[in-house]
Length: 368
Image (cartoon, rainbow, N blue to C red; front, side, top):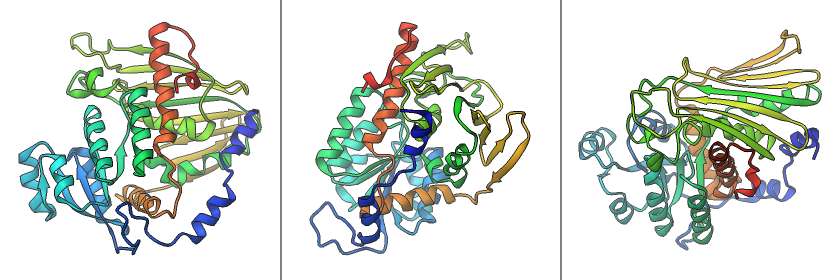
């Protein structure tokens, strides 16, 4: 497939999908009820860390599609504090929450190694899942969870909020105007003082370091815009803090390429500051430069041709994502970040780790 057709393929919408969006009006319930629409779906949140408290719970408060009805965290102290603030029941055992509450969906924001158990319990209860990235901690776990969701009819969507931001969705429109793209340069870096701190420093708990954690967002954008590469070469570092003990990579340099001729690199790091997120796509007639909150098209010499920017009102991205997921549950929208979609992400990540181990190019399409 040529680079041009690769880019064009991202815009194609199936006619039956359009028909579905126009004609679907009733709420699809897994429990066999009559499908009568509720005003709002009942949502629980498992894990009361920073992501939940700063994004998802405020997002639920601003959501038109769902309302918070229960919270869960292993910390009894947190539950005691927040169940009164939020005026909802609190649990320290997510299994008990699923037994006691009539949930339509659950938002899962737990350490990576805990995610599987929560998803399995949710599928047993036929509760839909909005899961913080990553989808899973390994390729085998991802396959098993995808199969479980498919067998139970549970909708699972991984939170990839950049897909709901107009700046990011406009990227391909500008890419059409730069001739033939031939190289991609991506970077997502931030500074964590101690990469060994907590569960994120241990591969057994996190599944890996900066690639599977913060890097998941940049990997998603590469797959969203260009598809799964044909080859990956990766080098990792676990030596940013030689005075600390950890085995989850603090930094990764990833080279990737497509048979079409497009190639590129990603720099990911949990130690290199300041916080930077960007993708540059270089073509024969210009450059598209995507940064957080800003998108520009430039000449190959660096002169700005056009620029888009967005100041986002907090927490609109989280609320938009929750509302979209509610429409997925209702059958009104396609699941753009389903388990099947995220098998490609896990293939990319698995190929990175295999390449770093073998010091060779790996085809991620052979990892799935």
